[in-house]
Image (cartoon, rainbow, N blue to C red; front, side):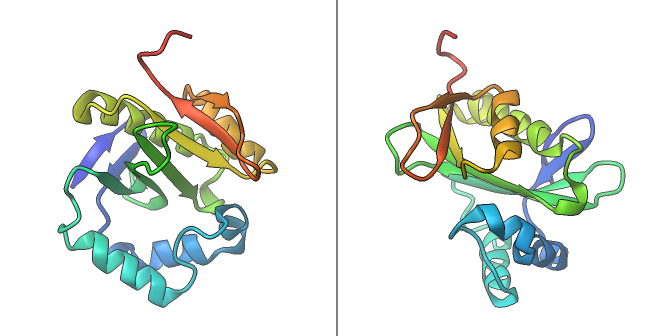
Length: 168
């Protein structure tokens, strides 16, 4: 079931048939390069993650784990996770990954923009933050294009803040 749609994309809860696509995504070294220690890195870990997120028991309004698909073909192209933040910088934090075969099409920006708007308008989330490796200029571009503002970095990452009600 689609939770969020854009002109080209559908963001939906994971389903069992996503297993192979998610394995390809998270075990790809080009994805792992910038994911640091987050996310499953082998098939058993992907299976565990998928079992948790297809069960429906964790859909309590504190986070969204979404598969990004192309609307025209239903092809999974990535993942976007948003949830309650442990960091006082913002209410929620997020992470995302696009399969390397589908990069440079604007999918990450389109998905992130739509998801942040959804969180703000439907879940009353006032702020969210994301971060990226300093060398990951593509991800930094995604976040700034999606309307986030770069803030003080951590010692190891660039950080970006979404706050739609703040004056610019």
